[in-house]
Length: 102
Image 1 (cartoon, helix red, strand yellow):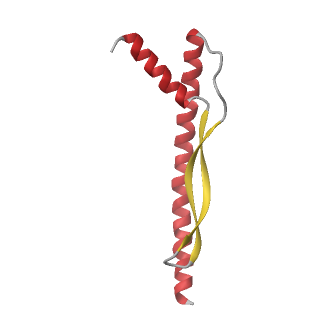
Image 2 (cartoon, helix red, strand yellow; image 1 turned 45 degrees about the horizontal axis):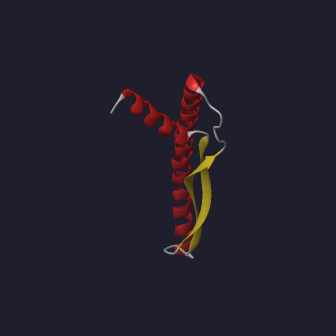
Image 3 (cartoon, one colour; image 1 turned 90 degrees about the horizontal axis):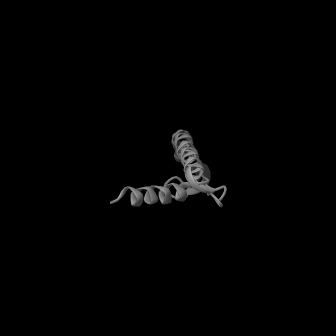
């Protein structure tokens, strides 16, 4: 693969990530084993903008910046989802135990 082809491929990859953020989302699900509504968190990708009219090196800098924002939001939101799901798991276990004793 030539340097130019590799550059175009990287540019297309970066453009596919451009102007996206990853957000945590809380949903309620029914737990049939316990007979309760339980909450869980998932990750959701949101597109917040579209890159139009970009030229030369400035375009590369913008794409790199947008890629960094996308990755940073994925790391932060992923950490929130993991912590939230641990809390929701404990909450679910407690509610499930209360259901068993009734």
